[in-house]
Image (cartoon, rainbow, N blue to C red; front, side):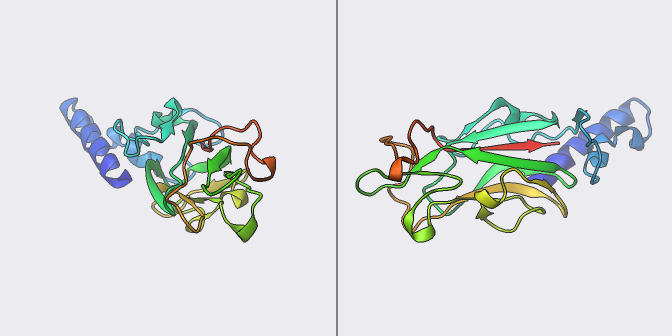
Length: 201
């Protein structure tokens, strides 16, 4: 998706440059933005790339306004990530050179009997299940546990790509964000629905 977006943006920039009699290099902002290290160190920079399209794929997922920003730093919070399947690809793109920090929290309904909500990032549970998972293309492995990623900074390499979030369970049909309770061992007492916060600089 990132490649097609950048192609459209670059084509528009070149057309604008030609109509004004400028050399093509003058409209090369988006292409330069994809070079690793460009526009970091706390500087605000418009890279001309919308990370998430206006129409979102998953109706129950809530995206903060920052997810649609094109200007660094980008601060995107995704609330109620999909937990009814192992892996979901989100329409949020990482570009080469992005400096990425991830945080997360909240709880998930895992279904079953009794108190069944679990923490999303660091669940206290039997069977070593119920962890939130993440893939940052060019930075992390494939669907690694969020608990091992939060609070660390990553630099995106390669071509970048789309965000993947996942969930670790042995059955997904009764997962979700319904019928709140205090959770197994009260781990979700006064908690909220799961969320993941991604900051790109």
